[in-house]
Length: 213
Image 1 (cartoon, rainbow, N blue to C red):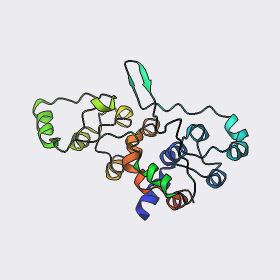
Image 2 (image 1 turned 45 degrees about the vertical axis):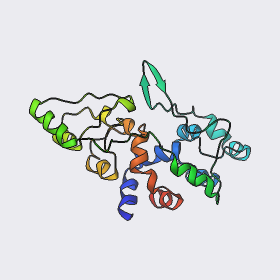
Image 3 (image 1 turned 30 degrees about the vertical axis):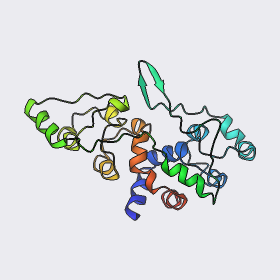
Image 4 (image 1 turned 135 degrees about the vertical axis):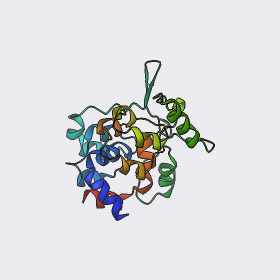
């Protein structure tokens, strides 16, 4: 775990936008990390308990920014935004409420599952035999999973702005670390799939405190 906290500490430009938008920050954490957080993403965060007290406390800060417009992908020219919560039944972070944490931990942020029968070895043989590339489709449910070996072999020529926000990779901390010098930050921090598989499982208050100090 120490290795992970060190990694994220060095990559605060990825870590802070993720937690600002997707972590259920408490009022205390909003105060504690006020000068570090991305407040446009905080304003768009659906998991913060936006009580009147919290709104009043940060009214000036919130008035200074526009809420971040999180777009997961575009289909037929229409931007698709996440909808993690029902407007009629919002569950917010409250310390000590196990129900909320079960709910938040089970959310699949930008989920994209690689099928069990996905033949990466066979696909790599075809790509090598025909010296061809893969089609990068940003529609998550039409995204062909890209073999990790394909990325390794062609990392110097790939369009990393697209790859960084692409759902159809075998996302993991190992993948994130291996290509950490190639990811494009502005694209990566829009990628909720990367958050889901590379960070969310480790996130809790103690982890954030260790990373942000």
